[in-house]
Length: 150
Image 1 (cartoon, rainbow, N blue to C red):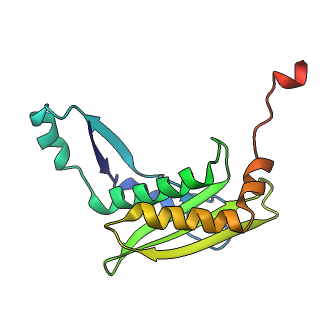
Image 2: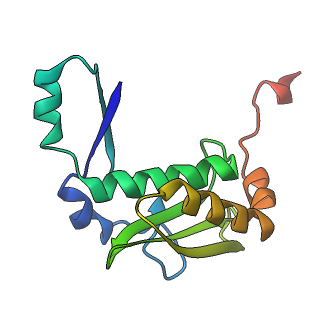
C-alpha cells in the first residue's frame, strides 16, 4: 500500500482566518491540511491518477510533524501544534505544546534535511519533552467519564 499527500489550495486561504490561539506563531494542528490517500499497489490506473495530486513538500511536512507527534505520545486532545516547510532546500519546523488553558507553553525549532524528515521530528519531540511537554500533555488528558461514576 502506498501513500499520496495532497495539499488543497484552500489551506493557505484559511490559515490566516483561523485563530488557534498560538503565541505569535504560524503553527496549527500537526498534519492539518494534508489529505492522505491510500491505494493498492497493483492498481496502476488509480496510482497514475493519484500521482498527479502528490505534493512532495506537503508529504515531507506531514511526515516530520507525524514523527514529532509520535515522539510526544500525545492523545487525541493534546494541545500540540507543529508547522513544517521546505525553505531554500532545507526542512524547517517549529513545534509547540501548550497548557490547555494557555497559561504555559514549550516551543522548539529545528532545521534538517527533507530526505530524512523523521529525524528532525523526533529531535524536536525530544526537545519538547526535555522542556516539560509531557506534563502539559498529561494535564490536558480527557477525564474518563466512566471512572467518575464508579
